[in-house]
Image 1 (cartoon, rainbow, N blue to C red):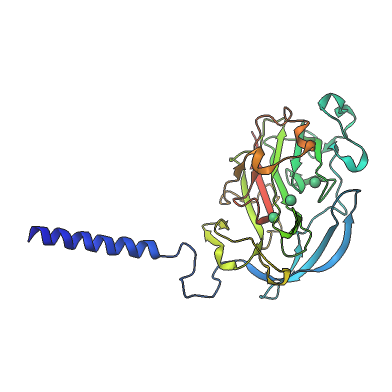
Image 2 (tube, rainbow, N blue to C red):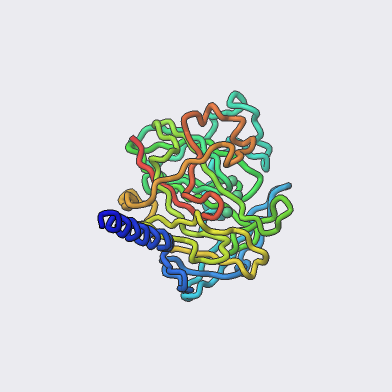
Length: 319
Ligand SMILES: [Ca+2]
Ligand SMILES: [Ca+2]
Ligand SMILES: [Ca+2]
């Protein structure tokens, strides 16, 4: 009798465990073909609105476009940005205009202009490198934009006057060739998903690391948008398949960027923590590797998916 009860209990536990294991890890059950997430869905390529935002010998065509989601919203891809009108961040390394120092001793930092954010602040300097595009806001003001939106890979040296604690807000874009689909020609694959990565170090003691917050607003390419799950504010695409065989079959998810996301008072505390990536994962080019000691202590960051998340906003408050 005792043995039978024990067997019964074991059987019951096994059935419960099985049930738990078959619960889908996404927001849909196995027979549900509907997307239940908070993103807006687009399918296929965007309409080109800017055929050449910037050009440089050897660089990729840098275009922009718009695409309409199934809920009727119009999205700018790869992202809304201030490249056309924003002050270009000073070059640390930029082969498009011949700034190609092999190390820091060849960089004239004294001639770099000072951007005054707070007249009664202190002078802060910083180094930035990103794949592919970044915009830097400090204490609610746009300091400047990446001088090269797509390729070749460049880096910036910035000098600004601002009051502590410095409130950093950085827009990151993994630019794309096939607008609206998050893809580019890479390694012979015309629909390669591409990847991102960003690193920065500032003289107020701030370095990029997992203490930063990172939220994604554009995920592509997707073969099935239901692979993206949401936990709290996290938009997780780690179980998604990025292999597409035609642009018309490429799906994307979009979320609206809050208009005040870079303001000093914007509450970003509920955003997910930034994810850390190794140099080997990011594969930084000479615009970074010539200056590794200037970036020492900083880590490459992005949202949780460095391949599929193409528009990522960062926030961090320094000391
Ligand atoms: Ca760039
Ligand atoms: Ca990408
Ligand atoms: Ca990229």
